[in-house]
Image (cartoon, rainbow, N blue to C red):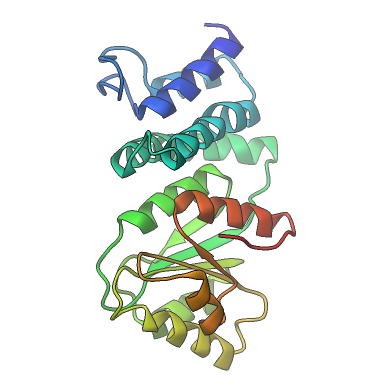
Length: 233
């Protein structure tokens, strides 16, 4: 395949949610055909610029997945398959990105708050942030407030993403922001929250910088913040 054909094939297979040749794909039986992993490796062997693989193949593919999700043509499992296919090749691309001098957009700390065991949404956000060029540190699920703040102190991230899926656990978001303020760690940190019971109004009430309704909004918001723009959600 030519360089443009490879980029197009990577983009198409992200849309199909095909990590490798063993995956069927969403619309056709594509078993045996190269998936995202095989195509990215071939592109690297042919010295296709990593920047083009990332932007025109992987990122553009995820952008189209987002558009289909907004139109309700794709659902969460479809989005997760595509995000996993992208996430699977990010470790492969990382040394090439460093070699090309592609700078990280910043460090992003992610956590599901205390007594909340849900992680699907957080994991999708993490994968997509990696694909968008952020360095992601995932603290996991049910992370005590003190541990989140300690990690902020240690890791010195640019962004903190907090997830909650329960009305009973979202209060820990406010506790986290309050403790960050007490420790003097809030001023240089952007805090983004998300999860089913949260809202823009709740984000404003607890002093978060942004609320994001889904993973695509989280990436869009983080990109705007990284470029010096304001938040949305």
